[in-house]
Picture 1 (spheres, helix red, strand yellow):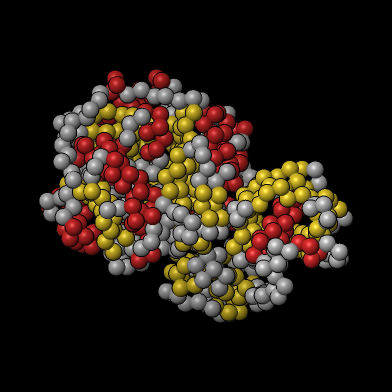
Picture 2 (cartoon, helix red, strand yellow; picture 1 turned 90 degrees about the horizontal axis):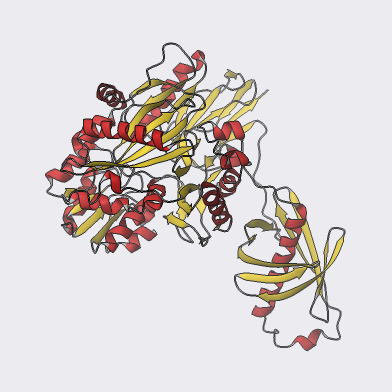
Length: 632
């Protein structure tokens, strides 16, 4: 039996695996990069070992360092989670050769499915429906042969864009997977991404656990997943399940895996790939089946037969998962960095998270903060319950996609089950929530009254209110910003304990009913509010509305240069395509950055001439750094 388990991963998936291992009485071991030294998963393991490095290649992708850590503490087994080394056949074999139990499929199965071109050929031979390569028809997908997760993938709609897309996909694939092989695949417009969870043991037993739908995607990466799919009938589930088992039998599959399909509108389906690992979206399957997939992985790795048969698998209700990212939906979902100043999950949902208050979101790793999962008797209830939980989740200090997820989950098209892979482009849910002026004004009043109460509580004069009884009490003024909106709040304490508040042309009465270090209850203009409230420097959060307090001595603004193009986030320069004096046309590629495992292309917004190039190949830049200056 496995008595000590090393998790060769980080963040939320490391915590997820540690949780089940702990429940099984297994000693747990974490490994970590320099930037993760104080991360929750490191503290929650019984033992943690530094990998001495900052980047993925120096740490979580280092076979030698991970194996050395396992040997150092006598680990019985290694669980790779997902990403990093999870689908590296050489790593799996090295673990086995070291006499350590590998919690995953066999190296042969990983190798067979690691090359997507070879995998498609094997599946076609096994009788699983596959997509043929396109013959001069568009749109097409350029895909990395050795990876997934949207890395090394480009949608191409015109023949003249194909060469550029292939070059970009090859660069990204090489950086993410160490192999730049790419291939073309026919793109199915209006299809759904449906995958089947499989489990197999060493004794030849195989089962499937039904389907998940993962069609809500941006940049070919999933953001909302659910089980079951609203488009899959019991009959179609049986057909797709049997196709997945055909794939598993062809591989002599052991442990957990996922067979992914594209489902067309006419009910036809086509093999995409087999993910030879635990999937990010596995919680929705756990919620509807009641099966702990990590526990099953560990039991199978110990050599035990499956404890249930296909007929024992039942489905209860519906589960929906949303991936909460540090990214800016209003800026084409670009990832962002920053510090999570306050993190507080809401009740009513499952949270698989890798963060806590104070966690730093850097450029070295994927910017996913948490997965939030809701389960309910019906699909509609699960979606609305998840939206409500997300709305009540406190995540302050960094820009996130939280409000976009809420808007998507509540959109009539989503609730109606109209969830094809082009959903975001076709439906275009609100990327930022509508915020009303009256809502902001009341929030500014609450922040002002809280600030005043906190200051009085900290004052040595707080025990002497009589000082003011026969004096003229001066008005206090606070000025807040929310985007381009400026809200000036003037308020005066009255002798009856209320406040007279002036906001613009409006004069209101306000009364503080209760205030603590984290919450205010107050009545403003006849409306009673009870809101969590937090402050960090000049930044205030009233509920989830953020306000910026104007300082008495504002900081000077950064210099701006006409025609200057800046870095959208911190990263490294991997290509500089122009020089000073070059004439460029609108849309022409100028610079390519790499950050958070993605390429970011800086292009010319209009025709012009390159006046300055401020960066060179290999340079590291901060968000807002000037890259190129163009003149008309």
